[in-house]
Image (cartoon, rainbow, N blue to C red; front, side, top):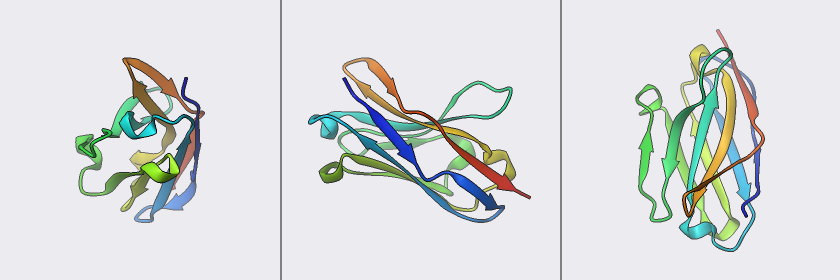
Length: 115
């Protein structure tokens, strides 16, 4: 079982930056695909970025060039660096772990971008 604790959300002005962190439990973090999803009010949860155990990444088109996902296997932590934030990035952001076909979720962290 994987437990996830996300942090780093907050209020920022448009054009600003935030970095989200997600600490994962377990000794097999290095082989776990990690991701960040977000859910805006009235919308479905959607993938923002994902990184495999081997370091391959993919991003939603809406965040390409602005957001960067990375991981530190020694710290069991995945990060989401968000630059050039826009009001439409406002959402609750959820950390996700995919291991052996099972999804694990952290509690969300709210990101609010003011115009």
